[in-house]
Image (cartoon, rainbow, N blue to C red; front, side, top):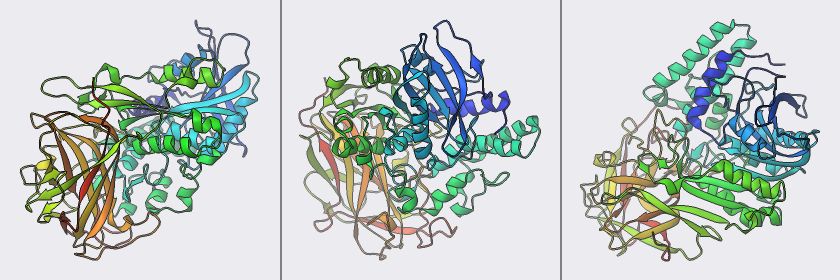
Length: 635
């Protein structure tokens, strides 16, 4: 059995969890069989061990309502230590008491190999089997009535999807908050490019410290020295991540996680598997919707790293869920939210106002009142889709938005609208002659040189997870648009509001002097005063342009069409604003730099510049494709 830890490690890890803000808060502590007295609310809590099929025990906080029971169960399975630094016991989770006060036995379980639980942590791959076992264990406890739901966000959403794929008999409903559908494209990679910031920041500041501490304790190091070593590791990551670690090449030789052995072996797996294979297929939710027999209450954010997967999970469940309840009961709520942003109604630099607020706990309680208790509270009559449509600030007005209800997503009456790239061959920078127009493509090709030693810097966007180090969300892009390696295409001022709701993509005709390179695209809203905030973004790695299963090299100088997926949005481009599209070849450190060679991914430090050409003539109609909702107007 893994030995008890001291409070020092709890304080350290809690800081990372508070920054993440992933889903409902949970607590963690140092005891294994700690029992708490009932509080003034009558809620009691005990930390017990839930046995898995292989004999590994997972520490589980059990919050029970006042009364005799049995009770319906809400289970949250997490790799994060959610206990606040000033918590006084093993059972201080606010959400545990919140749901227990409402008549649910509420469980917070540490994932395998995390904090008080036994075993070795193997990110993502362990959660399907353990999730199934945890649900079935909870269903047969004396305080349980056998009806189990699951809730939580990000990785805690992943633990729900993985459990639901196995169809445990006693699982009734789930409530995943901003979590993905495909852990290759949309979690670890996007468009074939490695999500470098997510992988390194999430691992260095959130996952690896606990693993390091477990290793040092198992080796017999004194506790005070263990805490010093772990604190030094976290501090080193904060100091070096942006200016050192993210720049190191080759990627596969990065040694920042080799402390007392490899404390993040899963990162090596991710780097070794840039293409879709059996490793990713085993966890892929998108291929397994027919196995999922329970309805899902899916919530997410337009500026979240997992935005696209959140919505694809909704569409997949409605189309192919494994039961009537799964297909017809699944619901989607999307609002202006980024991953772990510090302000609830703001997404980066823009606060979208009080109407953007959403109480997840209250919504989850209502959802589970219906599905676990059978209370006819109107959940069955709720619209399947609820979207917060963003209305950014305009001419001195504050940012805001409004809620839209629909029966499906994307909206069935949306009109596909194409804006074509055009220029006189000088679209470089926002001061260039690049134009977006519905009149069709025209003009000479635009050229720029992409140098991986001087990549275009990341400014906001759909990222995770350390907003205190590299912020996500909507920010002014004007400084980026001054670079010569950024092509900028801008529409004329809009004569009336244009509401865009649905997927965004760019069909880009381009050539490169390199056998492999990247092309990036960013949709931007240009305000009256020139402020230009990012709406959505995407990237495509040329070697994976045709298939995520196999590589395909470029013929230098040959024009090819690239499809760049920019995810989804729901926003109003207001009258007088302009629609802008940025095209470049890097977005660093959000994504790793393409070194413009045909070397195996992650195994080389050799880089070369690439001469890029973007074509927009009749034979090569590069275009931005938007879904316009003609019948939706801002109040």
